[in-house]
Length: 102
Image (cartoon, rainbow, N blue to C red; front, top):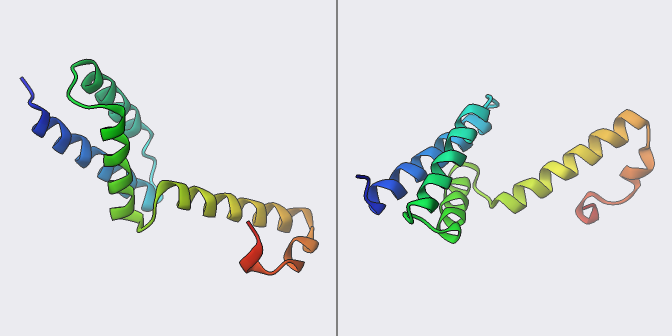
């Protein structure tokens, strides 16, 4: 039987692997699905709580990317808006200083 310490250690390793694959630009969908199932099993067996999972995920994300999930998602959204403005020829988007664009 898996104890809580071993479970948490394995879950942390799985989160690290997911984020390292993502950072390398590789497909991590198989690992994400596997980890989602692992989390559900851990919650069912009362080896972890949702808060513990969130904390582990944030810690692994910061270790790999150097920032929180929320911060990185915000910067990805900004990149997407910039790319959309370029493809649409909407150069007014760039009239606003980059420091104040969100």
